[in-house]
Amino acid sequence: MSEFQLSLLSIGGIVVVLVYVYGHWQQWRYRRRLNKDYETQAATVKAMVKPAPNSPQVPPQDIVKEASPVNHFIAEPVEIFSQLDEKSDFIVTVLPKFPINANALDGFWQRRFDYGKTVHTFGCNANTGAWERLIPESNVSYSEIKIGLQLVDRNGAITDTRLSDFRSLLSDIGRKLDADMMLPLIEEALYKAIDLDKFCADVDQIIGINILPNEARTLFASEVASAAQTVGMTLQADGTFHQFDETGATLFTLGISDGTPFQHHTLEQVRVDSLTLLLDIPRVNKPTQRFDEMTKLATTLAINLRGSLVDDQRVTLTQTALVQIRAQVESVEQRMQKGGVLPGSPQALRLFS
Image (cartoon, rainbow, N blue to C red; front, side, top):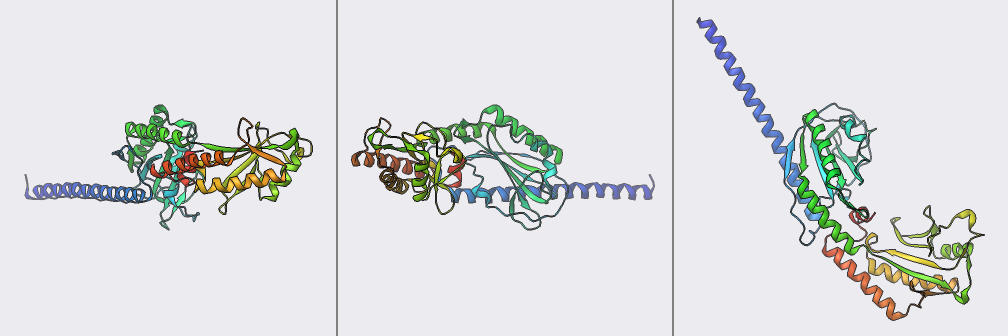
């Protein structure tokens, strides 16, 4: 073999080694970025939410891959950790090697309503660094994407079949895009969902105070509407009157006891023989304080409508009975706080929906 051929062979060998070293360095850099992101996210979530008693540990993560194009647009920033929580969501994190847009998740968009639970998708804007809600029409470039499937709501826990389908779909998308991904393990997520569902079922309570017109008479719905408006309640699309707090969240609802909805166009015709004022404990902040406010509100309504406060058996509610109900509300509030799900918080509103 000539000296020239030996030189070419040596140069070729050096190039192969350099390519290998460069590829290894790239993998190390992205893996380091992935781990750093996970540690930051875990620390933030841990600081925001107290762990529930006997709750499972944060599940280990599988690593997959993903990537794609670029674009530009400014959307409304969001606080992602008020929308996603490792305790209540199965969160898939996508870390592309280059910014991607919504089209990269094309196979996911068509199926996002197939899982029986709410799915939230957020992207980190590659230009601004702000987290934004990601929708199919987004033409923004994202350096990172988080997709969360809610594990529990008032209909119960996610099923293993649906959770497996969700994970498999995103895993396939990850392989096609060749991006790094964090995919929680199915078994750990299901265990967490069952544990969380039991906790939610234990504290999921709605307190009602009934208002019964005196002298066995009935009320026109228009009378109720007038009394409700006097105390700041407004008729909503669900057919009940709502009272809202300063943020626009519902505090109490007032409806016909048998569930018949109020409607604007029938207020002058419909008659009502009993009303119920409701407090949805997990969905309001400071439930015990809200119960005190609800009691005062119910008393005012009863006076204005010439009625009495009664329980579900139409027995007059005594002060002793109200004190007992208040203690029940306080107990639920304390259990929720101890379990790390604050009443009225964004997490509670999603879990109890």
